[in-house]
Image (tube, rainbow, N blue to C red; front, side):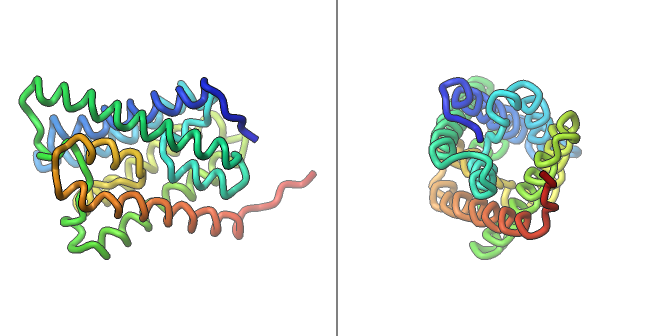
Length: 229
């Protein structure tokens, strides 16, 4: 079981910072309405995961997402202490990534999202629609992670699989909520965007990913094949 230390906490903070800066940064600077913008943002999030998985995966497991850490905790891969340490590190990293992005966007005079890439419920129709889509997308994402990382023989390709999964959940979710599936990713931009709408909707993008992660952990526990001693 993973032990908590400054190295894995620092790794989680750095990884989450990169995810927020590159993923939300692509939305802020490119937008999603222009030709290819939607796909470019999805790829930026996915490729950030791939890159970080091969840099910090052997240090912290490269969760860089409180929902992923919750899934790992429920599957008894990390302790409660590690979960809490990772959660705090991820939120700090996300705020750092959002702060860096704000500096860059202010300097460039460009924010095509108008809210630093924050998640909003409006595209999903209403609060309930946003909750459902975020629960479903997080469930898929965390279920894939639990499965692919449970098989050591898939270790060399796990980062690619996880990155591609994050890409395709963004392809579906971007037009609806901007896609969170990650409470830290939502917290950072919402706090620094100055958008009341983003702050009002923030609870959705904290609660729904955690619910999706819980469901994924339950389902994976039911379907996973027990290893022989």
